[in-house]
Image (cartoon, rainbow, N blue to C red):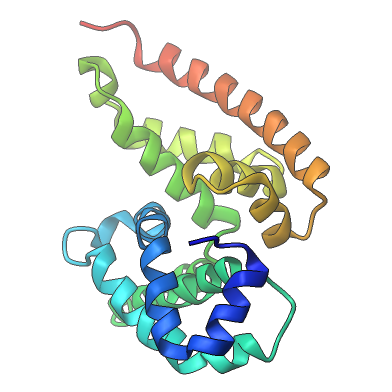
Length: 209
C-alpha cells in the first residue's frame, strides 16, 4: 500500500470503514510504540497498549468524517492525536480517585512539559542493563527528569518524537508546526544534549561492579 497522505485520504473517502481498518492495521505497531512510550509507568502493569488502541480505534471510526472534512493534517498525524487523546482519557480514569490537579494538567498536555520528561526518563532507565545502572534509585530518576526539564521544551519534544516514537522528520515538523529544516536542526541539538545528560548519569551511577 502506498501510504501517501493524498492516497490515504482518497482511500478513506472511497472505502470508508473498510479502508480505515486496512490503513489502521499498517500503523498499529507504530501507534502501540507511541502508547507504550507515553503510558504512565504506574499503570503499565494493569493497562495494555493494545487495549488503548482498541478504544482509540472505536473513537477514530466514529470521528472519521471529521477528518475527511478537514485538510489540516495528514491521516497519521490525526490518528496519533486521537490515540493520545484516548490515552489521556485512560490516565484520567485511572487516577480519578486521587483527584490530583497537577497530574491531570500534565496528562491533559501529554506530549509536552513534565509528561515528556517522565516518559523519556522512564524509557532510558528501563534500557539500562549493567548492574550499577540497574541500581539507579529514585534520587537519580528525579535528577534525570530535572535534567530533561532543563532542555528547551520544543527540543525535548522533537527528541521524543524522533528518537523514542521513531517518527520521520516530516511528521515531527507537521506535529509541531515547524519547517523540516528547523525540526532537523532541533533534533540534532536535542540529541547532543541528551548525550551530555546520559554521560553525567553514567558518572553518577559509577563503573560496573
